[in-house]
Length: 576
Image (cartoon, rainbow, N blue to C red; front, side, top):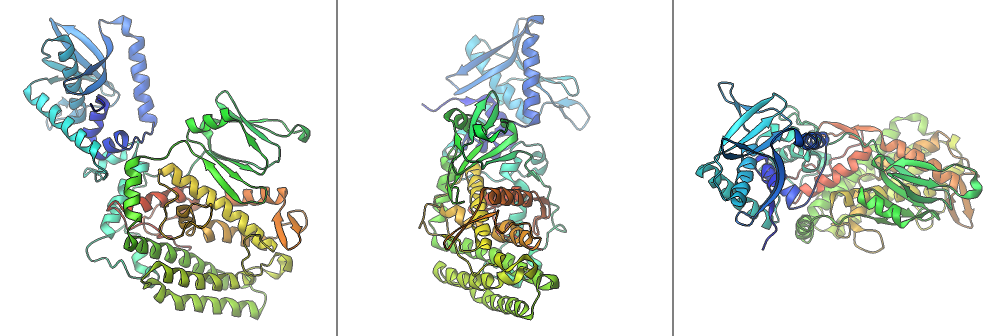
């Protein structure tokens, strides 16, 4: 027998089928201020229980397959009457009379059914108290009420068996007050559907149709329901020998005994990630604490290589099934790959163009010539790249663009920064100069943030669409970080070199041909990278502003919409 439906889930169903699906099929829950305020109201009611002749009780119906807690049950003139308390205001009829909202009616119908089944006597009415405008609305319980209840239960059971998420609500006003709007992204879904009209040419090169990336504010004013920034902290524990533990409702970072530094305490609700570098340790109690509060835990080696993550959940099976179905389709993967590669090339080309306009960054004709040649070569590859017929040829074009880009990268660094800080091509494992050491560690930090966002959204990072699983790194994380390499790593690293923020000897460790960041250097780059993530950026298509930190999660959610018939906004980034 299937699990009984919680009556509050029927309230969500009547409000929005998509909300019901997210909460009760994919089990996505977000407790915002309105939810907490409703809980506080019920706590106050329970405290005053002894002052009246009412009681609250948990009931379950075998007949209807429902379970719920009746707010209040009173006896009036020999009749049992279930009561429901709501923090907000009532609906209003055209004449201004107070009425119950349809979702609240359905909830009181369900409570009446439970009371009738357990009491063995008919229930003639229910009552809903709206505390914001201090009105009581009477709701008749009759055959029509039970027919509506039966239809709603049937629909809820149907939704529980389907893999596809229902479409966004037609009534846009419902979304503004919904606690799950940052996950559902209804405004972005509507905008994506508007962009993905029947005449949209998916094969066209976005670099060759600049006007297509302009905000569609004249058609739709997108309301930002996605948080612009994350006020929580990312705790980087980079001192060797440090220990992370739990102390009450706080995370405690204990430095090595010989450091002379005091322990630090951070409230768990103010922490989004904990990143352990090198030989830092974390207790099992702290790991469980982080899992309980959805705080990501990540490990990097002392050399800056990303190792892995600790995650509290794996995401809903429906979400994974949708991802597997989409990313096992070669044509669909090619479409996504084109969008991804074009986004990366856009940012690389824009970075070179911006630098070429800043003459103070180029101290010689040779540097200017290298940049011009790279820009010309990249532009020449745009057309063929957009028409690539398979992922292998697309990788070839992207590799050629990357070679041109990294050949020009030294010309972006001023002579005043010193020849020691200029890269010699791109060297990865291990980096063979100071600039590559900075880039490699920055890319590890970026990989960590992209993977964290994937886990937060609930996708499977092991199944991507562009990269092949050739290392321990998750392919989907490698895919998505391509969009952010220039924005979050290359640009701030080059800027920091040109500002001469690096100490040639103290910030780097040289071992033969290998160059690594020292502990001091790692801490300095972490600070630069985290500051960059807090910079605000205006999305060129959606039209609203948000931090780069939030942009990473937004792009993961927009990727998921690509296989939910709500696509059209993924990988539309542009460096201004």
